[in-house]
Image (cartoon, rainbow, N blue to C red; front, side, top):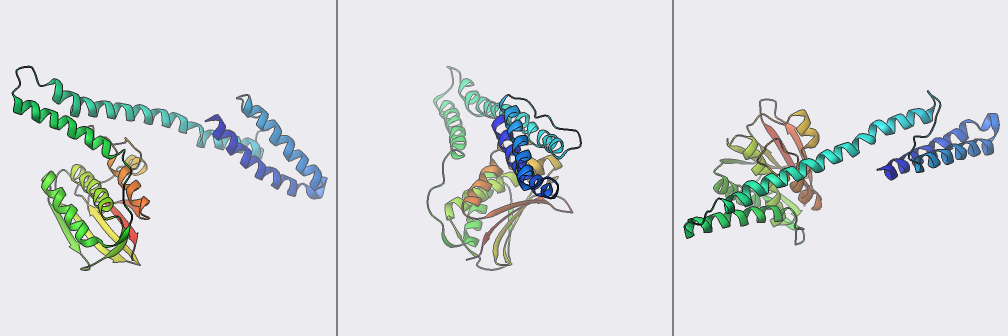
Length: 281
């Protein structure tokens, strides 16, 4: 953290020093202006190396820069620590509920069928967790995304018992994607919509707009809160106690890995939308 702040201050002060050198050229000459800037930069670097905040006169550009860096950078370490604690807590809770509980709940008197079911549940949970750790395989190709969206919508509806209504603006919308990776990412988006939409029917629209292939997934829930807008793509962040908080972050990683974009919004008459888009091929 100290290194990051040091680099930031160094870069900013280098620019500030250059500007100071220019502004002082008429009064003291370019050489003296640069020497003063270098002196200030050296003093800042020495102070940072000792773990101290460099001294600067109140109201000076340096003072304002240090204050801005403290406000903009220092809290991030605290945020990272909180995020790490949250991540550990979520993974532990997931393992307790989805892996340990099914296994420990099977006593010695458990029948073979019950034991097999509990083992399958535990292994399935571990497979779900492993899914987020695997790198996607395969290359992108020119595809018609309409049948891909239809396929994953049917799969999701059957798995989760949530209705999916698809609206097609065109019979065919082509983009350069990895078919399996696109379906995996859309499944995650649909799963998120089903969970936070309270199980109500999810609307999916496929269309081409301004040279881009768009897939919009809308739920009927309460929409994103202000905090959720800021942290929706943070790994292990979730407003649900049951979730790992990896769905949308992983979906975005997969989609952006194929050159796509993901955008979030709230719908005026209720619910949230996730828009996935690619350059149309």
